[in-house]
Image 1 (cartoon, rainbow, N blue to C red):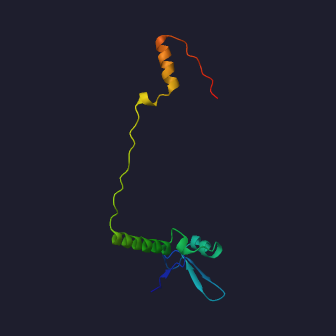
Image 2: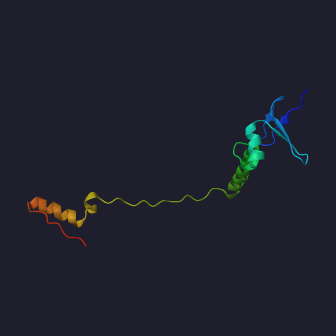
Image 3: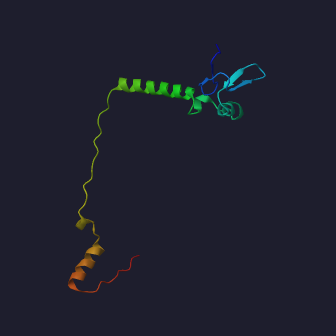
Length: 118
């Protein structure tokens, strides 16, 4: 029976008769399931724990999540925070003094004089 190998970068199983084997001068052997894994590790020198689509990344992420959940369980629930809601002003209150003057003059039929603003 043929031995199943595991990819050195992503951690997936390599089917017999497929993949690449890379041997360094110092004797370390790397097995790669696809060219993408080979390029990421050898040429681009990426770390599998920091590459999102690899199994080492997923394992590390799930370990962090489980430790966070434990911390939350120990602390318990926090007190609910009450939010203060400001009351909205009425439309009549929001009008500026100039707009009120214009409306009152329009009602009386007088011309509106524009004030020079500094």
